Length: 220
Image (cartoon, rainbow, N blue to C red; front, side, top):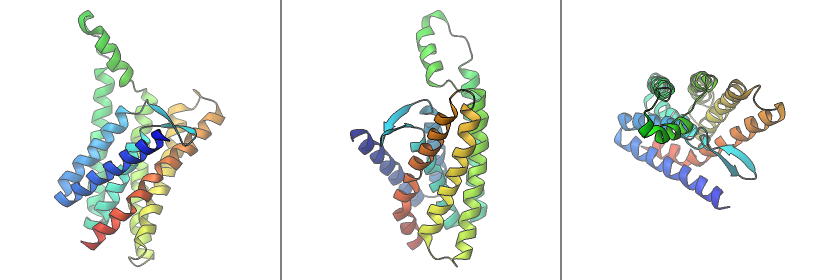
């Protein structure tokens, strides 16, 4: 139960900082988006026991990226949302490329222990690199499109619906694409199916918890 409370607390604190960033402007939102992407990569290899199942801790920081995109979409429009998406994509490509190359550089004997620790912490397979980049781009395109489409269909009403539906569907696409790309052939099909479903369900907590923030933004 302590793990679940900590997990939910980190989500709420992250969302609070995202809301503060929105109050300060788009530049600060871009910073929070990049920071969440960095944290997603840092915690990519950490698995925790959550709600009776094993979940990747990176889900904690990846889903808020879509909340930020929706906030920009709501306040500044589709064009700015896509610009924010491209900022995230650029930072993701640069981060993954430099981490992959940096951890491949042989270390001196004096710092071998530290080098090994960094290599373990930031070890990213080529499949995970491409999987992360591809699924980020596809899922972000989906959430941007659905957010505007649902908004048009509901004539700007039902904010909670377009906010949650756009992110939840986008995260489903992300999970369906990412886990097979990253893990197919390395785990059993049963395990692959399990982590795909549980990973998606855990990520869905984030847009639900972020719903009140979207209404605070709407009022301003």
